[in-house]
Length: 76
Image (cartoon, rainbow, N blue to C red; front, side):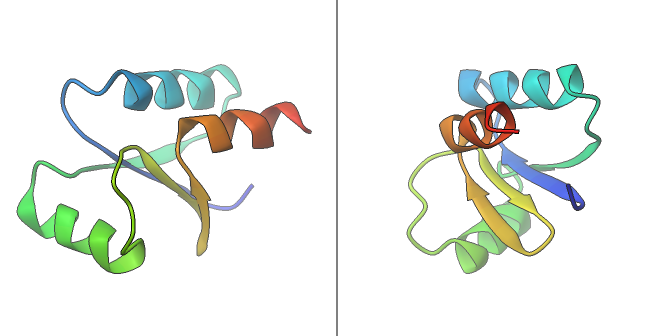
Protein backbone atom coordinates (compact mmCIF):
# COMPACT_ATOMS: atom_id res chain seq x y z
CA UNK A 1 0.00 0.00 0.00
CA UNK A 2 1.21 3.51 -0.78
CA UNK A 3 1.94 6.19 1.82
CA UNK A 4 -1.00 6.22 4.23
CA UNK A 5 -2.32 9.48 5.60
CA UNK A 6 -5.09 9.62 8.19
CA UNK A 7 -7.00 12.72 9.21
CA UNK A 8 -8.04 12.31 12.86
CA UNK A 9 -9.40 14.27 15.77
CA UNK A 10 -9.23 14.09 19.56
CA UNK A 11 -11.75 11.80 21.22
CA UNK A 12 -12.66 9.99 17.99
CA UNK A 13 -13.07 6.27 18.68
CA UNK A 14 -13.13 5.41 14.96
CA UNK A 15 -9.83 7.26 14.55
CA UNK A 16 -8.31 5.19 17.35
CA UNK A 17 -9.68 1.99 15.80
CA UNK A 18 -8.27 2.89 12.36
CA UNK A 19 -4.83 3.61 13.80
CA UNK A 20 -4.90 0.35 15.80
CA UNK A 21 -5.82 -1.59 12.65
CA UNK A 22 -2.95 -0.02 10.71
CA UNK A 23 -0.49 -0.75 13.52
CA UNK A 24 -1.75 -4.36 13.77
CA UNK A 25 -1.08 -4.77 10.04
CA UNK A 26 2.40 -3.21 10.39
CA UNK A 27 1.42 -0.36 8.08
CA UNK A 28 3.07 2.97 8.77
CA UNK A 29 1.00 6.13 8.48
CA UNK A 30 1.10 9.87 8.90
CA UNK A 31 -1.52 11.25 11.28
CA UNK A 32 -3.03 14.68 10.59
CA UNK A 33 -4.96 16.30 13.47
CA UNK A 34 -8.05 18.17 12.24
CA UNK A 35 -8.24 20.17 15.47
CA UNK A 36 -5.61 22.34 13.76
CA UNK A 37 -7.45 24.72 11.41
CA UNK A 38 -4.96 24.35 8.57
CA UNK A 39 -5.24 20.55 8.69
CA UNK A 40 -9.05 20.71 8.74
CA UNK A 41 -8.93 23.03 5.73
CA UNK A 42 -6.65 20.56 3.91
CA UNK A 43 -9.02 17.66 4.64
CA UNK A 44 -12.02 19.69 3.43
CA UNK A 45 -10.14 20.62 0.26
CA UNK A 46 -9.32 16.98 -0.46
CA UNK A 47 -12.70 15.54 0.61
CA UNK A 48 -15.25 18.35 0.25
CA UNK A 49 -18.24 16.20 1.25
CA UNK A 50 -16.60 14.58 4.29
CA UNK A 51 -18.74 14.86 7.41
CA UNK A 52 -16.88 12.42 9.61
CA UNK A 53 -13.39 11.42 10.65
CA UNK A 54 -11.17 9.61 10.13
CA UNK A 55 -10.58 10.28 6.46
CA UNK A 56 -7.89 7.98 5.12
CA UNK A 57 -5.75 8.19 2.00
CA UNK A 58 -3.31 5.75 0.39
CA UNK A 59 -1.17 7.93 -1.81
CA UNK A 60 -3.60 10.14 -3.71
CA UNK A 61 -6.44 7.62 -3.43
CA UNK A 62 -9.17 8.41 -0.92
CA UNK A 63 -9.95 5.21 1.01
CA UNK A 64 -12.72 6.69 3.17
CA UNK A 65 -13.28 6.11 6.87
CA UNK A 66 -12.63 3.28 9.30
CA UNK A 67 -15.20 0.88 7.82
CA UNK A 68 -13.79 1.42 4.33
CA UNK A 69 -10.25 0.81 5.58
CA UNK A 70 -11.30 -2.31 7.45
CA UNK A 71 -13.09 -3.76 4.40
CA UNK A 72 -10.13 -2.98 2.17
CA UNK A 73 -7.56 -4.56 4.48
CA UNK A 74 -9.70 -7.63 5.17
CA UNK A 75 -10.24 -8.17 1.44
CA UNK A 76 -6.51 -8.77 0.94
